[in-house]
Image (cartoon, rainbow, N blue to C red; front, side, top):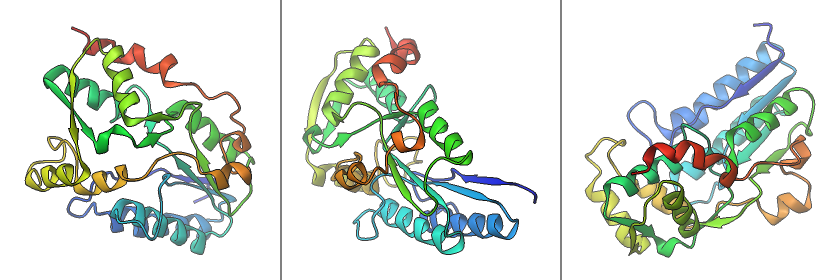
Length: 244
């Protein structure tokens, strides 16, 4: 009550029990947007994800798209921000693979490591959100945000190993094999599973800012962040702890 700006940054990477994709990404987002409108908030900012697509084979992507639609139905002037993978000291990407490189003799190279990503530093994403809260961006618009570098999954793993002081070999894993492994490890807690079937499906598509978003000016620069930081400037410092 009395809030001028509401920001929804809630999401889950795996659907578990009551914290399902539908409950969190769709109904949760709808409830927050409705509450923001009813409370008289002037701005609503919703964090979604690059890859949100109602026609995707991945439930994560489908529910992210459904969540965007639910938000705009309740709060038509909402600003939606879709980031690529987000990195920072407590991320679940570089830290996860650095930990894997410390413990495992081989690193899985899902889909040949060809999937492309555009990692964005959490502080740059936060700056974009703050700018949107203060008036940047066009109401009712979906923005796609990524960092300055587009890298393949293989390149990201190479960098992670270099910064963690490791030199593991790779085990090429076709998508079908990765899905089979995910199915076989399904009973384990998500913290112990290397990957879920849904995450493998997400890896089948590039995770980068689209050409349409660039052409239409729906990018990080439009939200006032003109010089985003690359992973090479930020990540080595917090992967230091993984070195031998």
